[in-house]
Every structure is written in structure tokens, then in C-alpha cells.
Amino acid sequence: MRPASLTDGSAREPLAAKVPEVTVLFWVVKVLTTGMGEAASDFLGSTNLVLGGVVGVGGLAVALWLQLRARRYVAQIYWFAVAMVAVFGTMVADVLHVVAGVPYSVSSLVCAAAVATIFVLWHRSEGTLSIHSITTRRRERFYWATVLATFALGTAAGDLTADELGWGFLASGVLFAAVMLVPALGRWKLGMGEVFAFWFAYVVTRPLGASFADWLGKPPSFGNGLGYGDGTVAAGATVLIVALVAYLARTRSDVQPEPVARPDELVDAGR
Image (cartoon, rainbow, N blue to C red; front, top):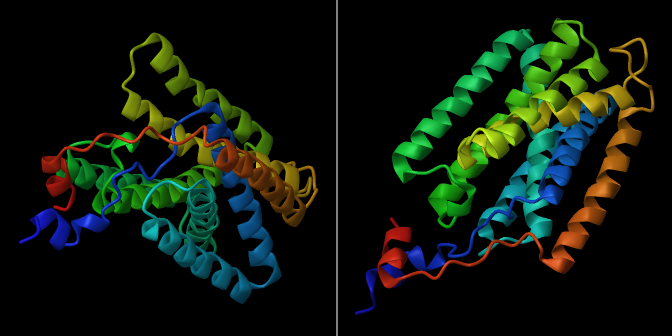
């Protein structure tokens, strides 16, 4: 009889980490995807709501299907998934506000509660929230649920400061850029935990990128924007993302080292 780890479906479990190593380029591409998602969602929403829904929902479904189907980290697939989560997450926050009339202050709290709940369930199930442990399907599903919730949270928080509090897009962008220094300094000087610092920064990059994208794309009459247009900003960010992801795919500089799995770890991975 074959070992249980090879007959119960766990042989299909990814043994290599399914997310990239955290480097400077990781954060650069992450911020660009947040800005692209904000601008693309707003552009599609103002152009054709049906098309926007098809791109947002359909694109997310295709991207996550490709990502979850992959056996290991592939830069093009991973960042395509992040980009589509950015578009969809923006739509979720905007629908709650525009269609349902939920204030950004309330949606920010709801999304924060969703993120906290996912973290609790994830840690209770797996004992870790580290992105270096995304080596099973279950952990990967927790990871992408967290990513989606953080994008929605970041969108709501960015719109809260820029719109409801009346600070405008540039001031909001500067604020979140300053907040980004908290995990950086925390890791460097204060001994902040790696996992906490990562997710802190991951959440903040969403309103950071979205605020600057809105500042570039929106007209001066709306949040003191520069008026280049959401479509132009989305296209420009997409070009930069494609170029950087192509570089990462070619150099493989962001691929996490593969762990050497023992036989008992192969069994545990399928649980």
C-alpha cells in the first residue's frame, strides 16, 4: 500500500513556498498594484458598470484559479492574482459606500474586524501567520483571504482620510507614507516581530498606493487631484508592474529557498 501522504490528495500539496521573498522590489510592486487597482476600478466603474463587474469578479476568479493550481511560486501568476485582488477589493469597498451607503468609517471597522477574524482563525488552525509557511493549500487559502480583506480595509481607510475627513489625496498619501515608517523602524530599532511588521506594512501599502493614484488621476475639484485621469494612471502603473514582474521572473531573485521536507512533514502537509 502506498503511504497515506501519497494517496489522500496531499501529494498535490505545494512543498515550495507559494509567495515571494520580501524584498524592496516586493514592496515597490505591491504599492504599484494598489494604485493600479484603485485607478482601474474607478475607471471601469465610471465607464461601464457591467464591464467593471465582469473584469473585477471574473478576473479575480481566473487569477486565483491559476494561483491555487500552481505547484510553486510563479511571479507572473502571483502578481496577476494580487493585481486582480486590488481591483476587486476596491470595488467591494466602493460598493459598500456608494451602493449600500455605508460610511467609510464603518466599512473600515468592518474590514478591520474581518482581517482580525481571519488572522485568529488562521493562527488557531496553523499556529503561524508567517508568509514563509505558505506551503499547503489550507495556508494558501488563509493567505489569500487575508490579502483580499486587507485590500478592502486599505481602500476604505484611504477613502476615509481623503474623503470623509477631508484631507485630500496628497495629504492622505503622505500620512500613510509616514505610517509605513512604523514597521520599518520597529523592525530596525524596536525589535518588532517579523510577522507583525509584515502584515502591518501590507495593510498600509493599500491606502498609500491608492491615495497617490487618486491624487494623480482625479481632477483638482475632487480631493485636489492632478487630473491625469484614472485610465491613464491605471495604464501607466500596469506598464511598470509588467516590467518589474518580468524582471523578477527572469532573475528569480524573489523566489524563497525550498525547504527540505522530511517524510513526517509530507504527511502533516496534507492535514
